[in-house]
Amino acid sequence: MVVFFRLHGASISARRPPGKEKGPSMIKLVIFDLDNTLTDFVRMKEVSIEAAIQAMIDAGLLVPPDRIRKEILKIYEDEGIEYQKVFNKLLVKLIGEVDYKVLAAGIVGYRRAREAALVLYPHVKMTLIQLLGRGLKLAVISDAPRQEAWLRLCYLQLHHMFDMVITYEDTGEYKPSPAPFRMVLDTMGIQASEALMVGDWPERDIVGAAELGIRTVFARYGDTFGTKESGADYEIDDAYALVKIVEELNKGTER
Ligand SMILES: [Mg+2]
Image (cartoon, rainbow, N blue to C red; front, side, top):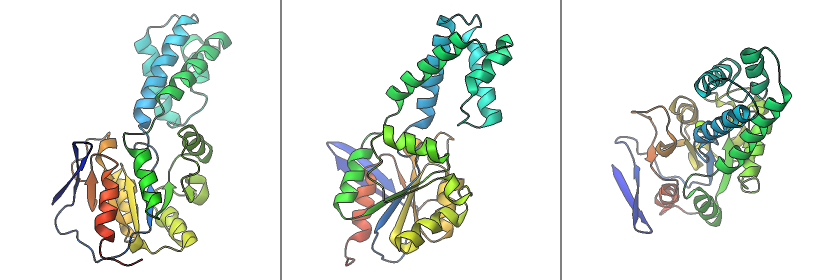
């Protein structure tokens, strides 16, 4: 089933795979994944890395950009995408030591570009405001480290919008573990059937929420894996479709 909504002349759709209908229940809480659901993390990372490479070459690093890029990606692959000492390690690898002029140039280049590239997907802000205006509560469950998740939320000016933000350190377990989902529901006093989980990663966001009976929405606009089957109750190509999904689900239910 495909539900189309119109927004300023553009059509926004939410697809509901057949056989996924669940009983009526008032949605009171929407839980969001952070990276690639609220913000285009992958693009932000790419843009920041490119800026850092140019800045380091400008500061005197005599290595071809392709080689630098390859090494950076390799370090992120080995140490995790949130690794904070990537350029230190890069310089030791490439020139045998940390040249602090080059390092500083890389960090500044990276941060300047990141600040510009760390933006919300279209209609995310409006969607959050509309959900809050309809009396819903909002939460974030992210596998990012606590400080990085909060920094991103603050850069994005979203830090006042969520009743709860659960990061990896809060439970010590990554999605799809039920722990972060259960923590949000229990702390907020919300039933699984009254919540909606939105995320871009089927194996983590969708599986984890669905296991507890939380309705799921796949943010296809943030998909970087070429996901075919999301397994979610809904799929959306634009964040604003969420408002329509909540309206549909809450139609005819009493608060
Ligand atoms: Mg994500």
